[in-house]
Each structure stands twice: as structure tokens, then as C-alpha cells.
Image 1: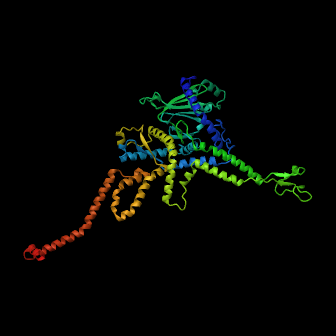
Image 2: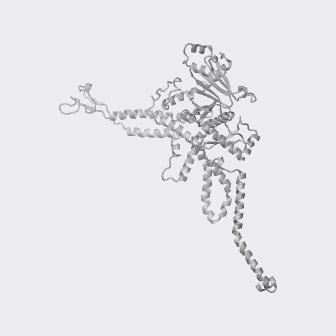
Image 3: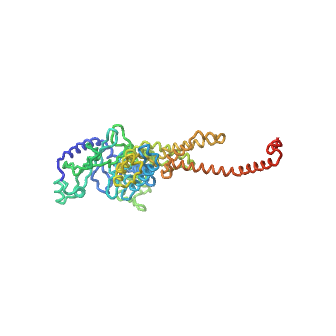
Length: 563
């Protein structure tokens, strides 16, 4: 049974109070963003939002919500597209990189990782999209990577309303508190009935198991870390499940790697949480919604204007339906007693302002930059389109790179750790074992090969190809100009920047063997080509010798004759 008034719980609660204070100002921003953007529930405004509850009361224009959805879709396509290998693995030790066996192992480990990540039960695609959505909307998103026995990997997006974070001196998130409100019976199913404090067990016995209680999951650096131990002290991170109301610890444990992967769009020098496009676009979205309300009212008055009537007219019984007959609507002279009030409202001017606001919002969410990566004008050549896409990729690099370094790299480190300890990585080659690498701990580097990174690195291969095109006319004059370029090194750069898989490449020994075979074949071909000439020369010499022997003085006589 969990002890109430536990000192460990008090320590977690003191830290949580500080984290709540640090997040308080952000909470007010996020609540307002949620009101104007989110159609998925009001979690910041109501922690116990009923499933399916309407949350669009303040939304009169869908530009903001649609921009947030498109941002998430675009980030998915540019950073982690399901149909591509959007990252690779490489040896951290430069000396190991030259071994083809090591490179092949890195590729095989990457393939196993992608297979586990995109397994149907892992649910990575949907959960990562939700995390990108939160990053675009609030500036911070959280993806929980769980170690599930029998399935290896399980992903779950955690809404930012539940997450409190703190970072280390280097600015990396090292402490995460997640606040949930589960039902009491769910706590009993997960942690065991005997673990619950007496108060919660009494509620269960009284049939109040559906009542909800807050619980905090704390993950933080292990101050007593000892890598030689097999218990929680042997793990770099310690974990506590705390009941704040009872000041009790339901469970303690640890993690080898951080299970909460935090992604941030951009952060200022003094802030822990990120700021996203939603925060920047909020003033424009609020103004757009007000403009839309005004235009809707003006358009409604134009289409169905108010009516002006004489005070003694029949307005009390007036029928506005099409085809209706209203007796008494004309005087004896045939003049209308009821007339529409036509205002001078310029709906068209309002729509121009709306269009400008929509353009600004889409620009804040980079929709225009993402669009240029898929659209190519008809009068634009392939080279021009590539140059344009490369420029846009460079503009997206800083913010997208932050998501990769914060979220993706932390996630990959967590995935590799889980799969290594589950024995789901291929056997290591001899070179890696001799270098001291262990199967349970895989210190490898991450090489991003997403479409965005390929666009950013394409400048090198593009420069090489431009150089060859420019040198073409000079080569026609003097073919020695190509001596200035190391063709082999240029080919390696192009292969690397284009993301060619390692398995199709030969190692240095295979390349040298291929070259030796080619040299031998060329030498044999040269000998075959020279054989007719050599035979003809030998025949001429033999004939000359026969002539010489038949003349007086032998060869000397022939020499004299020739002279």
C-alpha cells in the first residue's frame, strides 16, 4: 500500500508547483489560441472536456484551423514521410565508417527500426501528426514512446495541457511532469488494488470507481545513477507516479532514455516552452473572425434588408415568404407602404481585407513555402524549380531543424534503446564489437535524409553539375580542364546528397578490384587490337630475312643494295 505523506511525493509536488508557476503565462496564451483554432476540444479551458463537445463557438472563419492542419501535414511530408526512409544511422566513430559491414549494419538496423515504427499496433503516423499539430498551434508538442512487451514500440501524443517541462543548462528538456485525471478503477487496474491509499479503496468499495483523481507522472534525472546496478538506480532517469491529494507515491521506477519526446517550434533565450505559428497568427485570426462576422451581417442585410413601414401599416401580419400576398401593402395611389432599407455597405471591400488576412495567416504557417515545393509553374524549367525549392528549404531549415533536434532525435534514441534491449536489432559485425559497442547500448549517430534535408544539401550536387555544364565549352577547346576536378570525389558528394542507400554502394576493396579487372580487360583488348599489326610486321621481317639470305653478301649485301 502506498504511504501517504511520502517525502518523495512532497519533493515532486514542490517541483511541480514551480513548474506550474513557470507555465502560468503560457497557459493564458494557449487558452486563447485554443478558442480560435482548435476544433478538437477545449482542454486548456476545461480539463474534463466531454468527448465530442463542440469547441467552435468563436470560430467564424476556418483559415486558422485549416492552416494549422496543413502545417502538420506539411511537416509530416517534409520531415517524416511514411513512404520514405527519412533518416539514417551512422557510426559515431569515424574509424568505423570505412567498413562496409558497419555501414550495412547501420542500414539493417534502420530498416528494422522503420518496420517497428510503422507497424500497425505502434500507431506512429497518427500520433506524430497530432504532435506536429500541437507544435504548430502552441509551439510545443509531446510524443510519448512506450516500451510494450510483445509489441516493442507504442506511440502516443500527449496534449500540451497535461505536460510541464523543465530543461537543463544546455537547454535540453530533462524533466517532464504529466498530469492526468484517470478514474479510480483504472488506477486499481494499472497499479493494483493493494497499492491504492485507503481513501481511494473506500471509494471503490462504495461503487464510486468512476470518480476521477489527479495523478502526476514525474520523469527526471536520477541523482543516484549507478550504471553498474540492475534496479532503478542503474537507470539514468527516475520515474514516480504521485497522487497529489494523498501525497503518496503509487509506483517508482526508471528509464534508460527519456520516454517523453518534446518538440518545440522556436524558443527565446529565457523561455523553456516554444512559441509556434499559432501564437504569432493569433491577432490576425481574431481580427479575421471579427471581419467575417461584420461581413456576414452586412451581406445578410443586403440579401434580406430591413423593411421600412408606415406606422399604421400591416406589419404585424406581414408575410415575407416567396409568392405571399399582403393585402393593404399599397395605398389608394398604388404607392408601397413597406420598402426595404438599403445600406451603402461595401461587402467587396470587406472581402478584400479578408483575403489579405488569410494570406498573412497562411504565410505565418508557411503554407506558401510548402506549396511551392509541390507546385511548379508551367513556364518554369526543372532546374529553376529545383533552385526555387532549394531556397524555400533553406528558409524552412531553422524551424524544422529545431523539431528534428528536439523531437526526432530524442525519439530515435529512445527507439534504439528499446529495440536493442528487446533483441530486435541485427547482430553486430566484428568491427563494432572490437570497438567496444554492446548490443544493449548502441552509440550511433543520426543522419537526417528527409525531403527537407535533401533539399538543403542539394546545393552541393547542384553546384557540381553547374560546374560541369559551364566547363563543357572549355572542354571542347582543351580537354585538360577536367584535370582540375576530382571526378571520384564529385561522384561521392552527389551520391551522399541524393541519399543513395549504402547497400547499392561498393566498399573500397570492391572498387579497387573492379578497377583492376577493368585494367586487365583493357590491356587484353589492346593486345588483341595490336595482334594483326604485330603479325604483319613479323611477316615483313621474315620475308626480308629470306631475301637477304639469297643475295651476295647476305644482309650486308642487302644493306649495300638498299644504300
